[in-house]
Amino acid sequence: MMVGLMTHTEVPEGDVAVYVARDAGGVIRFVGYTRNLERRAAEHASRGWRLEEALMVRTDVATARSVEQAIINRLGRRFDRHARDEPVS
Amino acid sequence: MGAWGYGPFDNDDAADWVYELEQCANADEVTEVLTSVVSAPGYLLAPLGSVGLAAAEVVATATGTPGDALPTAVLKWIRDHQHAIDASLRQLAAAVVDRVLGDDSEVADLWDDEADRTWRASGSDLGRRLSASYK
Image (cartoon, rainbow over the protein chains, first blue to last red):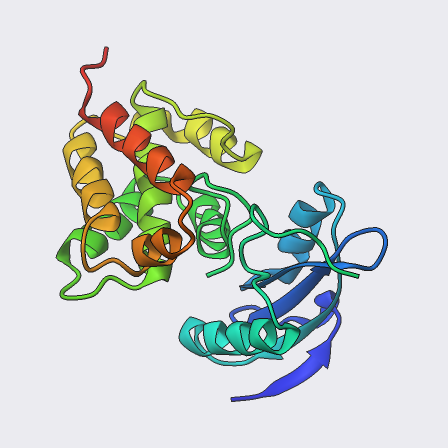
């Protein structure tokens, strides 16, 4: 497994990226993962979210889910259910 | 499992699957996913369950019982490949919805843990559309 910080332009095809989405004020709104960070960034942009950083995980989805959950646990609350979450500052 | 809404495409796994669907010029991708879900032994993990619901929604929409607010990319694919989705897939798609919403399904467990019934209501609506008569 290879892990490192990256920008969304650096994701090799086939890799999985765990990302953090922030709103225009820089507040974290969502933590997720994708195989195509550039597309996901464009999709979240329509919600007013920016993907300013991501953690690239060169492995399978199962491990990406574990990394995603570890980030959520570190943040101390659920960020994988945007529909229910209020932003925190 | 990351989800930003209650619809079949409002999560990371289904959204990624759309990118694969776009590369497919026939029903193979949809059929493969549906078959994988109903044949999956034991506990159905969330990534496959989420993609299964998305594939079922493609079938429902392409065969005349559309859902609300599908992504533009999915609507375009359906418009361009509607002929490829045969109505015979509806029964299989309905079985997928039953599987994902039923016992031994991680995505159902995750949403049920939220004590929010909106996702389950959305899935049940999809199941009803697939089971309904259609023209």
